[in-house]
Every structure is written in C-alpha cells, then in structure tokens.
Length: 514
Image 1 (cartoon, rainbow, N blue to C red):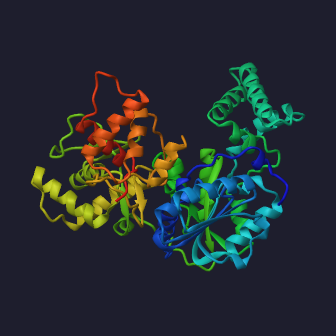
Image 2: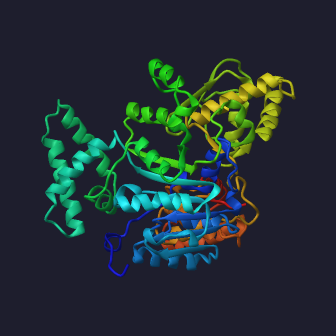
Image 3: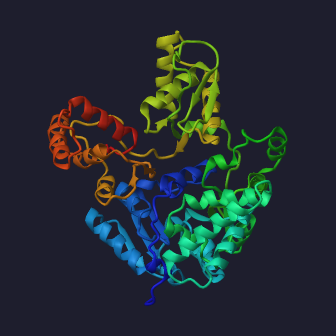
C-alpha cells in the first residue's frame, strides 16, 4: 500500500460510464423480474474508482443514497477527495484500499461496479472480485463488471504484442506511448494493402489514434492484461454462486440488424440458454468489450420479456422526422432519425404522435400512461383520431417503443432522471458541470453522460446559471463577462434571445436541474 502504483505515476483520467449508473442497473434488473433498490435511496460500491469521476456525479444526483469507492492509487483518491470537498458532498467516501482487503465488514450494497478492472488484475484479484460481488451484494443487488472480450480482442492483442515488444526496454511512460504509436503506424503503413493483416493493422491504428496517452499506457501497454470469452466470466461467477443477469446495454441483444439466417437461429435459443445466445452474438459481431451484469444465483429471473413490459417503464427519445415537411396528420409510413443517422419507421398514427411528443420533452423520460395520454391528444387534434385510443392502438404503440428500445433508438428507465426541460425563473445548472467547466474537464450531464461543450461563450454562460439570476440578470452578467474575456465583439450585444437560446441548449443537453 505504501509503494506507488503505475496509476500513481500516470493518473488514469476516468469519466462517467453511463451503463454503471444505478438507474440503468435498476432498469435492467426490473426488466427480468428483480426488485432492485431505487437509485434515490440505495448503496453503491465502486471497485477501482480512480479519481471518482464516475461515482461523484451519482452522489451529487442522489443525496439520500450512500456511495463508497476504493482504489489502489493514493494520488487518485487524494484528488477525488479534493473534488468531493469542493462540492460539499456528505454521502460519498473514497478510500485508498486494496481489493484484497474488502470483507463482509464493509457492508452490503445494492449496486457494485467494477469498470475496466477485471482484465487488468491478476487471477487471484479477479477471483476476489467475484467473492466481493457475492459477499457484499444485497439480496436483490446487481453487480456490474466490464472486461476485454473475445473474439474482438484478438486483433487488439496482436498489436499489443507488437507495441510491447518494441518498448520492452523503455521505462519512461511518455516515451513508451510515443514509441508504441510510432511502431504501430509503421506496421500499418508498410503492411500489404491488399492483405487482411494489413487491413487489421490499419483498423487498430485508427482505434489507438482516438485514445489518450494515459489510456494507451494503462490499457494497451499493460503486459498482464487479459481478455475473456463471456462464458468464461459467467463460469467464474457461477463458482461464487452468482448468475448472469444480462449485458448492461439492452440493444446488444437486438436482432433487427442481423441477416435473416442469423435472426432465425438466435430466435430459437431457449430461455435457459440466455447467456449462450449472447456468446454467439459476440462470435457473429466480433465484440471486443463486454459489460456484464450479475446477481445472486437464488434470484428467480423472468426471461419472458416482450412489448407489454413497456407499460411499466419510462422512455426518452430524441428521434426527429426525416422529412422536412413532416405532418402528423398525413397517412403512410414516416421515418424518424437520431443524430447518428439510425432510423425508425412506422405508419401507426399514435406511435408517430408519441415519437413527436418524446422529442419535444427530450431529454426527460416519460411514463407510458402519460405518453399514451399526450400522444392521443395530439393525434386527436390534428388527425381527428379518437381521444381514447383502442387497446389495439395502445398495444401497437408498446410494440413500436419496445422495438425502438431494443435497437438502441430510445432509452428505457425504471426511475427517470430528474432534470428540467423548461428553465425556471432563476435557472440552475448542475453544480458538477459548473465545477467541471472551471477545471476545463469534460462535462457530465444529469443523464450520466459526457457532454461535448466547445463553445467558449456557452461555457462562460454555464458558469453564471447558478440559481441567483433571472433571464434579465443573465443578459447583464453575460455581457460583462464576455467583455472582460474579449469574447464579445464591440459591435455586438447580448440579447434576451441569446440567453433564452443558451438556456434551451443547456436544457436539451440535460444540464438544468429541477
């Protein structure tokens, strides 16, 4: 414990990991028949919390819940504690602690998170992690563990071997990363362009180009890291009387984009082969990273999930009509798209109205009954539809939503995030985000996502939205701040419309609190 670790020498940046959030874990658990603790009143334990960048935003969001994080890097914990003190949080504790020292005395938790640890520790520590999941997990608790997986990690391992051989005698971290990038670029450029090997090297070069130096140093240049097949991790969990719940991302199991043959085969897997089907998904897709959820083996799971389950949940969607002249009252099929280009098509009037209503409410999540009520009202007002939809229409809407959620086009929530979609008289932006702006860090919104915020004027504006100013005061104070920083041209003035635009942007990004 007294010796510095590689993570003390090179601090791992860390960030928020959306799939680890208690509301996501609770949703997955409830989907398969569990009764998980509500995120607003739960206990969360993160193994390998680093700087606390994943855990601290959760603690800020849920003041009545308790959070504990441990890490072997003393420097990381020290910096995390400084952040907690600056935010004034009382419901979170970070400890400089070895995984091997965790015992039943630390208590039980509703959610245990271990992101990016399992593949990078020795076998005895991996076994201890499974023991912690068993011993420290509440009866209806959920454990999250992520790791490099096969078959997608085979190409990654190949270039890791190349890079690690090249830097085998280099000890300086910065030089190791520099030389690793250089040798991979050399191999990618010189490998035969028509060969599968050359194509793989160039693909891996693109992957590494998008990674920070700290990530390459710890993730790719760690000679001891190891990848697994899904069934191997599930078997290790089984030895500790844990069972496979599901993948942390629901749309990993979606069949819509598979060829007919694959879809037909996957649909034939029986419910008791739930994990086996997911393993075959990996073989077909070539995935290289898994986010696996586990629970106690005595929990009875209900694998019969269909569209009727939508009535128990909330959904959120930013789908917008593809057609610029879209009119709800027009009959026929309408296409809706996400910013990434993914499409959903439907000719069902109530479903089209529901998608339009969800986009207007974005980023809030809307309960099924509320969605039916408002979509019905919209359909009745523009297309003369009955104010009370038939059970057939409601079931069709549930089926459309289920298809969208299953394919990653909508978000599903058991407990919707609390955020404002309409600015209050004295709007308040998340304190986490305001602190991150000051520290020039990536922003975390109230949906536990990292938000890109590159506009300098908008960044200055965000720091002013602290609940002490109305819109008129924001106009004055933003003008003063931009004048001081030189961001406002002399021939321009901040207007009320500018402030309203920026407030709307903050709301759409999930940064305004209720």
